[in-house]
Image (cartoon, rainbow, N blue to C red; front, top):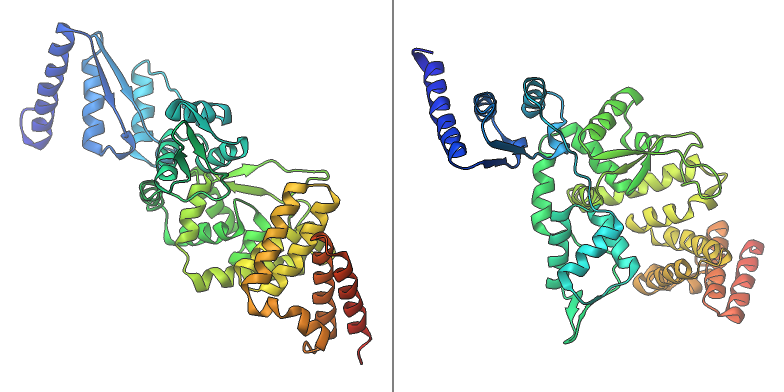
Amino acid sequence: MQGGPEGEKYRVFEYLAQVYIKLARHKPIVVWMDDMQWADGLSLSFMSYLLRRALGEAIQFIFTARIQDVTQKGHPFQQWQSAMTTARNIEQLQLNGLNNSEVEQYIKLVFTEIDISKNSIERIWQETHGNPYFLSEILRLLVEEERIIWTGKKWRCQQLTEINVPSSVVNIVESQLRRFRENELDVFMQAAVLGDQFSFETLRLLTNLEEDPLIDIVETGLVGYIFKEQPLITGQNVQPTISNVDEFYSFYHSTVRKVLYSKINTRRRRRLHLKVAEALEKAKKDRLDQIAPLLAHHYYNAEQYQMAFKYSVESATAAWQALAVEETEKLLARLAELLEKMDEVRSMEYQAQSGQITNQFENQLLATALAQYRILSGEVLTALSKFTDSERSLLQP
């Protein structure tokens, strides 16, 4: 330590340590170091030195770090933390996100008087998973978008179904994603196409990867807090999957999935959705009714609107039979949107009646789907004529 760069470094360390020690002898102090996941080797080395020199002094040290960053294999903070835990009595606390009830309390503390539905609170929690920073930024954006408004007496929040991601949150997520390799990010983006929850087998079919390399990438996502494992669900409410025995994963934050999904260009996004839909149809051809909502979603985003209409009708019929009124109304709105939005779909009734669709089976499917839609919409007499069209299409030579 007499000379050279290393000796100079420790002379600076000792000088800084003496500053802290003299302050503490005058009055007890708290040293709070935030965002330790960004600390470089020199900074960590100094903190190690200071912790050793401050033994017995009136100094309280508090270090904070984002767990999804520092748990990466070989991360400098992880190694530093292990060394410091053995050298000093350090207590580790892992702070979890706010739960649904705490998110509601937070919103009411911010706005004092606010009309907001339980469903909207649940939707905000799903988007943020109780991350306080994400929560505050999303609430700020909702005010800017006038989805939370001041009525003159109190605040009122619209019914929330979709929530946009603030640019400040996008920047944080993108900075976290930079630590992954290109091939890992590509798999993560394809997983984002599958939705908030997906099975390993569906992801394998989409990526065309062999099992072992895909397992390695999924494990990287698990360690890096991109994915989390979901328990295997059995019984009537089992999630649709290609295999009855399959591993399920979900995104750790739906915000992460949204950012990954936004990085996919439009053409590739459509192609991936179509690939998923066709793979699911092929793998579950004997039980398509179980995954009709999933197929409708993927065909819609693939802009295959006739197939989206067909499976949306099946989903709405199942919801109606299950007396799920809210879900039925939502699906009927989607069906009305499909009929209104596309020229192809708007002309389906004429095509089915006139036989312009040359494929008899496709003709019958479209007429049947339209008839089911009319029943769900309360147009029973119109529906009967559509079923007649469907029967006629099968009898055409």
